[in-house]
Length: 318
Image (cartoon, rainbow, N blue to C red; front, side, top):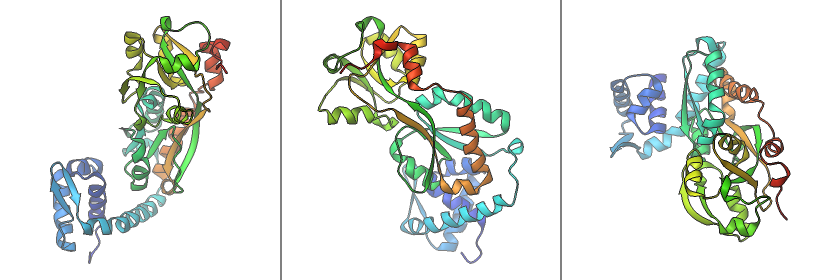
């Protein structure tokens, strides 16, 4: 571009990341004709189509793929510099932030996070993105989401991580389908179960079962945890889930909890964000606000919840 236009660069980067004129316009708070006009100018200046419409997606050309990394980096550097010159005031913030959560995260954390954000930044917009664990590194690197809460460790040097709670897996079923005392491995493997898809980020138990060469009888696989209470009550199936959410489910239904009959380590639920976010006052504030909101919940440790739910009767059998 002979005369670089920051708005044109923003449109190009957002269109590349969203693959949609509609979503690009929404994210930039402009009209769709404005995006189309900007794309037309970019095509003239770069002498390339840049994006080709295929079905419902705007597919980048080879030129678009080549220039995206440089333009993305340049845009982030410039916006960081511009933001750093101004004090961020959450009271007057009308920005939209995107937070990726599982349905468990929505149930456990979202009400408190939303309440905190509304108090601190009443005009802020929060968009919750359904978590697809395999896409998290790309989402954060490309700036498609501002932060992610998940339980699976994400090893990427460009990401920051802060543990927010510890959790532990337990098994749950309708109360009248459990005998007194802990469940043994034979009973566990014999009972029909409903499992939640690994895209939610909860695959640790399945990995350990594979190591133990133990197969469970899967009667149903679902994409979300939130449907489990009604399914368990209606079917008598068994399910494995984190004790934090099991505690909530048990409170409203005639469901019982037992420890797993094999050793599974506790796991951390963490907030992830891109390192570059620390250079932007708005992004930095958002991540810290989410952390403060979750910490204000004073969520108990797994041992406390397990003692509350079933005490010594839930101790794993060896």
